[in-house]
Each structure stands twice: as structure tokens, then as C-alpha cells.
Image 1 (cartoon, rainbow, N blue to C red):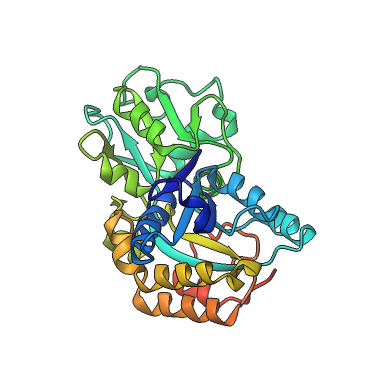
Image 2: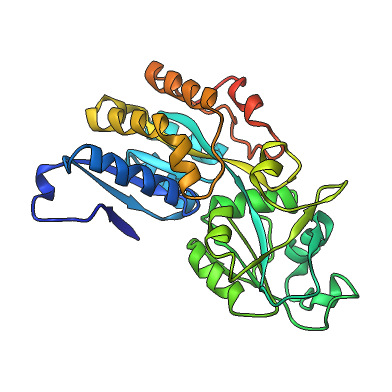
Amino acid sequence: MLIFIGGCDSASHMRSLIKIDGSSTVFPIIEAAAEDFQISKKGAVMIIAGISGTGGGFKKFCRDEVDIVGASRPILSSEMEQCRDSEVQYIELPVALDALTIAVNPNNNWIDSITVAELKKIWEPAAQEKILNWNQINAAWPAAKMKLFGAGADSGTFDYFTEAIVGKAKSSRGDFTASEDDNVLVQGVSSDLYALGFFGFAYYIENQTKLKAVAVHNGQADVLPSMTTVQDGSYWPLSRPLFIYINAQSIHKPEIREFVMFFMQHAQELVAEVKYFPLKDEFYAHNIQLFTDGVVGTAMQGEAGTGMSIQELYHRERVQ
């Protein structure tokens, strides 16, 4: 799906063009930044954004087809290799924190919290066609069939969730409703009493009258997703950073330089506006320095980075 942010008109061919693709989770942040930037430029720049999922976005990015990719998990080793093969270098910038949210139907009255072990029992590959009813997870829950909704295989949310819960990225049962469009998942969970799903916090909070968030037991306590629990690390293991990656060749385009600088300078309010959790000002200042200096590569070194703090991320060596 392609979206002409700010609309498209007969004068579009006169504008400078920025091409973005990637994560549906990161899209609301990119959309907010793009709309405000285009207003500031009085229509001189047009931004086209696709929602192919993190994996789909990286495929286009590493083929040098887009300037920026939004990612709900870091670039993977296989994608780093694809970019190297195409001689595409990139600048990695964390832009927000997210709480990957476990949600059920609001009329569900039997579950308020869940453990990582219970989530693994639901989602691991061995559960396929075997773990079908709620009471197979907990005997106190109803003998009714679960309807599962989750991110599709091209989604960074799928990669991050499976690594954090199952222990290996992309390792999951296949008999669930999968989509790279989080709105499809929200609709599925909100319309079925026996549903359970996972998606980014912004989609939960935007639809909180139609959904119920489930607390995750972090080994010590049941913790709901919130600004406080994400920033203090207690919402474990489903807190995560969100990223943008900029094609290093694109930074020579004035419109790209101006957009990224605008994004970082206004990131605190843009991220909060769409209900994600902003980084501290010092980290956005560090992003500006990385971008200005053209520092290429990833600090995540091809790993998902589950359990890593944002402070640790900025102190790691970057590799291409």
C-alpha cells in the first residue's frame, strides 16, 4: 500500500520527492512527521510512504528503491548482507520506544495477566493444531477455541515478538490470522470474545475502548504497558525501540537532509502525538550528530536486541 502523505495534485511532478516504506508500527510517527514537514515546506516536497512491513521495507531499501525505511526491529544480518551486495549504506536512528501490547476483547473476563511461559505455549511452533483452547493454557480459563491474531511474517513486530517470547525470530505457529496491517488485527480482536492478539502500543491506545490490554508477568510482577513501565524497563520483554534507516546516498539530497533534521528536532512532540513513547532529548541530539556526521552502520549488529536499553544501544560500535 502506497500513501501520498498530504495528498497528490496535478503539480506533484514539480515537487521534490521523498520515498519511504516499511513498518506499519512506525508509520504513524512517519506520517505525523511528513505532514508537518510538508506544511513547513508549503507543498514544495511530496512524501510517498508505503506499508510493506519492516521486512518488506528492507527488501526495497536494500534494492535502493526508497530513501528511508521505518523499522519496528533492527536490521537483520541477512538484510545487512543484501544491502552490502547492492552497495547500499545506511544511517540507523532510533526514534521512539514502543510497548508491544497483548490485547484481548474488552468483554473477556477471565484474563488480566499472562506469563511469558504461557505466551510461549500459545505461540511456539509446537502449538500449531494442538493448543487450540483457552483451558489448555490455564485450567481456569474457558474450554473455548482461541482466535489468534498477530503480525505477518514480513513484519518487524513478528520478528521481535517471536524472539522475545519463543526465543527465536520467526519461530511461530502458522495457524493464526496474520497481517502487516495492525488495523486488521485490532478489528479481529475487538470483534471476537475469544480472540487474543499482539501489536504496537499506538494501535492499542487508539482503540482502547474496543480492546483490553493484558499485563505481562516479568518474573516479579504483572506489568501493563505504559510510558513509565517502558522507560524503567519493567515491561519486559516486550519493550522495544523503533527505528528509521536512511540511505546514506540520499543524505546528499536537500529534501532528505531537511526532513530528517525536522523529524529529529520535533520528534518529542511527534512521537507523543501518535501515542508512542519519545526518547530523551539527549538521544535525539545524538541522532542529529550521527546523521550530520554520516555515521553508517547498525549498533545492533544484526541482532533483535531484546532486553537492551536505549543507553546501551548508543554506546555500541556500528557495523555495516
